[in-house]
Amino acid sequence: EKRQLGRRVLKHIGMLGQPRHLQAAASWQYQVRRFRAFAAQLPPGHAIEITFEALCQHPVEVTARVADFLQIPFAPASRDYVSGTFKENYVSHYLQCDPKLVAQVEELIGPTLVELGYPLSQESAHAAHA
Image (cartoon, rainbow, N blue to C red; front, side, top):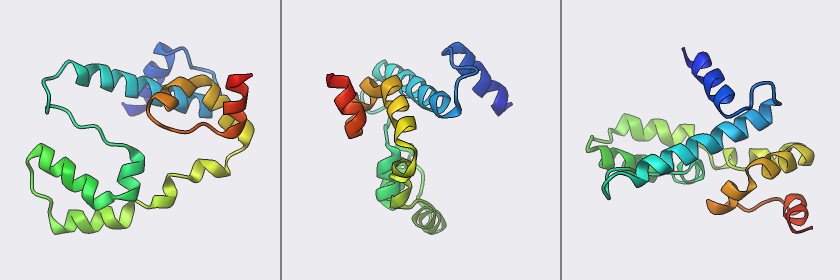
């Protein structure tokens, strides 16, 4: 079951019992690192990496790229679905979160965020250089 898998991942990465926002961040980091390590072992062209931001900002183009990668048709109904489902404002929803929680997440997974090109908040960026 999905919940059992999630709990096993959290246990594996030592995050059981931690606040939910830190569990989610650590789980995301773990999954990103695992995927990237796996993809690095594959021959070129055998993996595709997309970002949530790209999916929200360009849902039709990104989904068409995935369909092309999988060599499956991108049906008009699928095109309609993704264009109505993913919205650009999903990307920045975290900006409404408590800055202290954002700083905690960035403290936990900041290096991965930076490696992937995500800017850190001013508060976290200042703390990292102090």
